[in-house]
Length: 290
Ligand SMILES: [Fe+2]
Ligand SMILES: [Fe+2]
Image: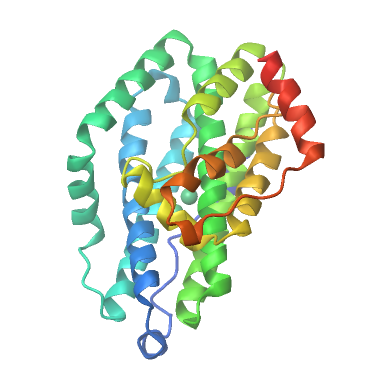
């Protein structure tokens, strides 16, 4: 299993009080950046509910896992907090992180209850496979989140936003490493877990934030963060990582998602990559095998 002591030693609240807020105000945010920051703050603010849902399951009563969840939730909380601060400094009206979290949750309640019910049932009937799935899902979402922050840090003209997002992305990469190593170990020599992960990912994969925004809103945000071919490149990198997990060869759920959302995007934002013959062959083989 991943080394929890190493994780705990590296854990810290994201530093943001030292940022040059005057410089942030002077650089300002574009309208699109303000929207994207609000989206990120919304998604981050939901982490506490994911933690509450899994922490109540018997299967999660493992000391290392509970330590990780506590640390993870603490770090995620301050991501939302830091982003909200930057928004306020740049003149955007935004709710405090905790108000935002409960308001959003109230709106997503029915969906959250259904997901929770499915989760509880799965955790009871197949605890080992459930944990393998939970870790794989977490790895995918942490990687996407890190990629989103890194992309904005590279493209924004606001140096303070770039610095804050580089710092947050570093923590997201560390979260990813924990989930990914844990998923790999739990899936090794475990055909039942591998089948469940493939089954759920191929039918339900959606990027983080799908409970917070409508599918079209979410597609629009992602296509703005990763314009044109970048969307397929970023999700392709995710697929490469997922495919490398035991038993998941040929699973390209990220790329499939990119194709699926094209029709939801305004025509000017759509992009379809040329067919990759090298990829097409193994993918077809894998779906006929499944
Ligand atoms: Fe985060
Ligand atoms: Fe994270």
